[in-house]
Image 1 (spheres, rainbow, N blue to C red):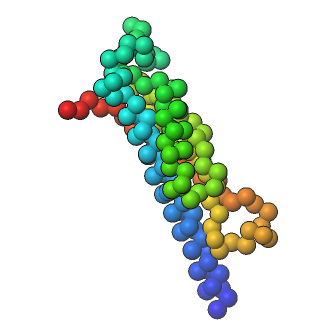
Image 2: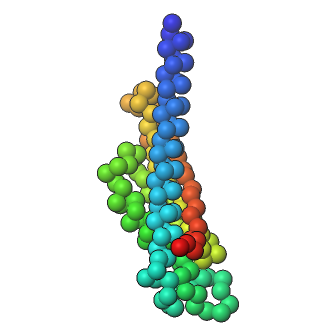
Length: 138
């Protein structure tokens, strides 16, 4: 009976970690989408935005690393009440080719069935990376 209970608790803990990874992935998707939406009709025609690898200088509507990072941090702050994970932070946020936002988040997962008062650990570190591309739409 003890082995069965231990097995059930192990499976429940693994499931809890998996669900935390899914939650973090959802937040990373939201942050990347928010960064890609930074290029809207109001900013598209501003010529002071440029792609890092552009030879011609200013490229209207291109994402920048700073804009992607700022949008990811703002989106994460807006979702703070919804995120039930510990220590969620933006590890990396940058623009890829001026039209793709890449956001990497990290957090701690503490499954409820492990004896954290006995284990000398702060939980498991989980990471999620998401990308969102700027597209021209109607």
